[in-house]
Image (cartoon, rainbow, N blue to C red; front, side):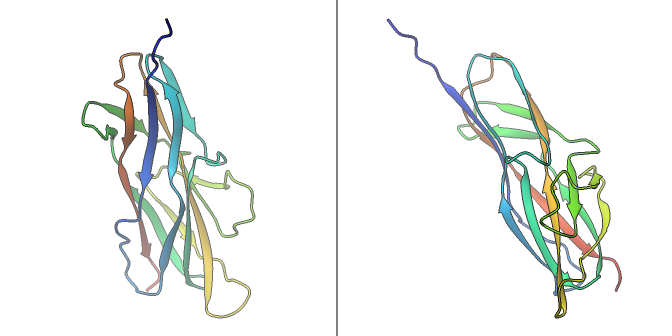
Length: 166
């Protein structure tokens, strides 16, 4: 007789719901969601997604060359089981977010910050034209216990980019 195992799919779906801008010349593109992966129900585990992990959320910001911006997030406190039967606390710290002016710089970016507090940044001058880029990563931490109900867990976070040099 074989036992039946249930799995817990854990992800934090980070969607750009709103971008608070002081100018219409900045765009944000979500390249990837924050994902904690899968585990088997009935186990106690901690999951940490660092900025250099493939599960970290990744955003591409474009705007006027050398524009000064402020990056912050509206973050959920917990992930919700999609069937409504449970939650998982979601945690962030002073190294859970980061930014680089160039995409090809290997994360973790040197400009790490607490996503709930935010960080000043500057858009890269680019190779020509009037627009440049800025790249933002988001990681996080969760801890599940053996009694965690099986299911898919998710929640939405919002990235906020405010232009500060106008």
